[in-house]
Length: 373
Ligand SMILES: [Zn+2]
Image (cartoon, rainbow, N blue to C red; front, side):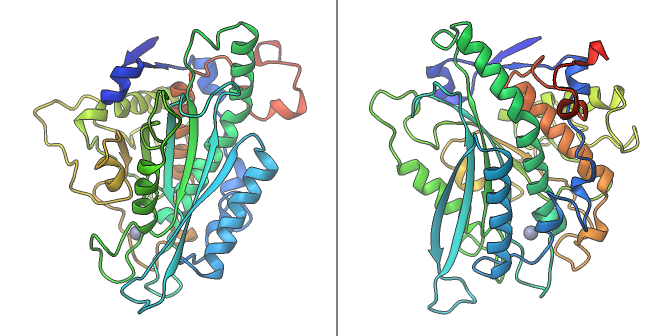
């Protein structure tokens, strides 16, 4: 099934972006994170589970973990930093540094300014108070989920784009890119206000709005080139329910809810079948929409016209901003299920049906596909 849709006014001008649901076989091929989400030794998650207040050694260590991951495992992803600094209510006259990391993968033929992107976003900083706060759901686990999504789609993107090139489709069909944005400075240092919160997001949105692409580009700026900004936050506690916040992106929420339902019916998720995360696929126009009630990293992007899909539970999990928000209080089946749901949604957005390889077997036996085994 192909659902054509229009993304905002820019989408209207530049043509619709397609979304193609995965077949059952492709959904079964969504990789399981396995032990990589182990809180002690997991390759993706464990290194993030430490205090990482902006400008501290913990922040640098976690940022280095991300950079090493992309450089070693995903060399096709282009890394860039967007840095800023700001005084905070605790820093006096000192400027605290904020470092956003952006990992981007575009089609190989893409020209600057002519490729729209799916942005998958989480913040990696942790709250300064209480001392020693880990922030496992806030947002170490969401960062690990995005790393898993990126590596799960990487080979399929290569295959799909190579097939498009050899079929001569690169002129006819627009293909979008994908971007992982890991933001710094989401947390307030003292009390959440407009000035004391989302330092990294505010700086990135402002800079990207002012960075002009070459004349006659499809997208005027890197900000305009974001087709959808999917923000993950506070994910990893058991039994979450994430509402559909915005009427404008409800279609995207519904697609992710459908992916969740299909993964569940195919027995690809670990949490109990009744513990559905996304329950508002059939929300009506006249129902109560909470959009705007929760302030988070999407605010400066939304204010500039970017479409937002906010994946945050309401109500917030019980451990929110408490010392108990640590690795031990994560519900790992929930963390792994979120990783698969977000990966499936991104795979459908990137139209990767038929290009995903069966998990586990892809390294051992690259020649064989599932049907031959
Ligand atoms: Zn927080």
